[in-house]
Image 1 (tube, one colour):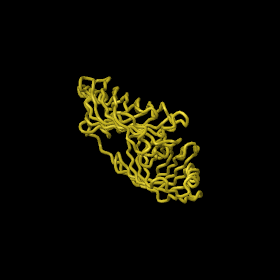
Image 2 (cartoon, rainbow, N blue to C red):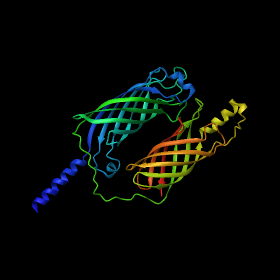
Image 3 (cartoon, rainbow, N blue to C red):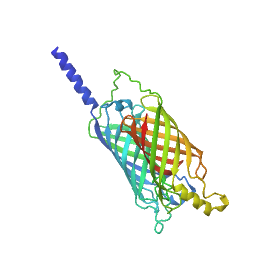
Image 4 (cartoon, rainbow, N blue to C red):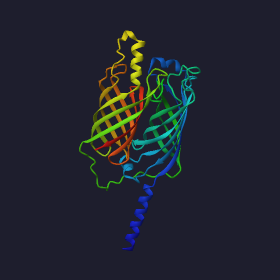
Length: 362
């Protein structure tokens, strides 16, 4: 019996060692191109943007349930520097958080990152009027990457190569705000501070069903933005949404809903447009409100989830923007029923608002 207890202690110790998080640092060089999404962007593109990214990684080994569910991902913080090789655009410095998800025997890595950036050369009416991309010094930064990686190429040193996409925008907190999108080749090395552990999936656990009946959500998203007219002034907006969601499994829920957009900057924009373009026959008293319907998907990680929605305006009296809109964002569940959120609402590549939200899921 004594030997049996010793065996249990040994197995428990190995399990705890297996589950303990480890750490790594990664350095990457970036070189690529700007992806122009408007005709008036071409004069800003003078070269191939270059950059440097440094990431500090927490490598998970199953200490928590969500780590096993997502095939033992990494998470951590990043620093990103990009030189746009354009005098009007200057450079950008960004910091934020990320997740790495693994596929194909952990050789293929999907990077999702969200943070904030500071640009060195924002729009200025007198000194930098050509920069219609950045209307403020502080920007939102969203990154995606798809990388081939070998993290133990030589002992604790690894190598990776892949594609990297970066988006910079202020969400039209202030105009102008065309934003910048870059796509780059990503080459780099990483160093593991601990010996890499073999990933062992535990197949002895009891599978839990995460399917739920339909839940109903109410969310209020707010913030400030400015109309596309430079200097027209910042106004608060209120985006009120109601939607149903159906959780299908551990990771996914589908959404269907509607929302009301009360975007006060539209009031001034409509009046300006009616006077500036009389040939358009726009009534200056046109209703500024919009109503949309949308479908969406929510990816549950832990208390954090990632949300993507695609919508269509069924009521849009002032039709300056296209009728299709989209939203990507992150949610944090304070409790099982109360959540906060941060999202970017856009019309294709053109951001309209950075939304800070609070909601309830019943």
